[in-house]
Image (cartoon, rainbow, N blue to C red; front, side):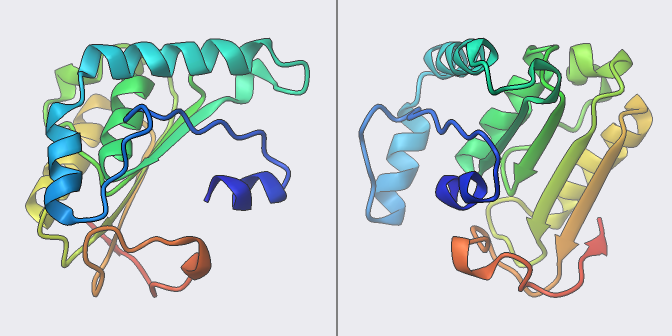
Amino acid sequence: MAENFSAEGYVVLAPDTYRGSVASTVPGALALRLSADTVRVESAMMAAFAYLAEQPNVDLDRIAVMGFCFGGGVALRHGVENPQIAATINLYGDVIDNPDDFGPLLDSGRPILGIFGAADQQIPVSEVEAFETALEQAGIPHTVNVYPPMPHAFVHPGNIGEPGEPQNA
C-alpha cells in the first residue's frame, strides 16, 4: 500500500511497529498486537514523524498519519498525541468513544477520516457509531464511512475504490 501511495507522488514512511515480526495466521497477528508495547510504538511514531519533518521534500504542514487495523488505532492515537499531524486516517482500527480523550484535537481543527466495514467482527458498528458521536460532540471535523458488506481488513492495494457506497455510521 505504501508503494501505491508513493507511486501517486506522496512521500510515505511505514514504520515497522512490530520490529520485523510478521504473522501469517490470525492467532499470530493477535499475539503480535497484544504484545506490542504502546509506549515503544508511540516513540517509534514520533521518531518517524521527526524523520519525515526533516526531509527537504516534505511539507511539515501536510504530514498525515494513516493505519490499517492495529495501525489504524496507532494512527488515531498518534494523531491525538502529535499536534503537528495535519490529518488522521483510521481504517478499521481501535476507536475513541469519549470526546475528552481527543486531547489536542479538540481545538485544532485537524480532521479525521474513519473507514470501517459493517460486517467487521473486531470493530462492530456500535463502536463506530460511538466513535462518530464522540467526534461530533468534540466538534472535530470528520468523515466516518461504513461499508455495508465489508468485513475487517477489507482494503487491499488492488481493491481501492471497490467496496461500494458507504453508509454513515
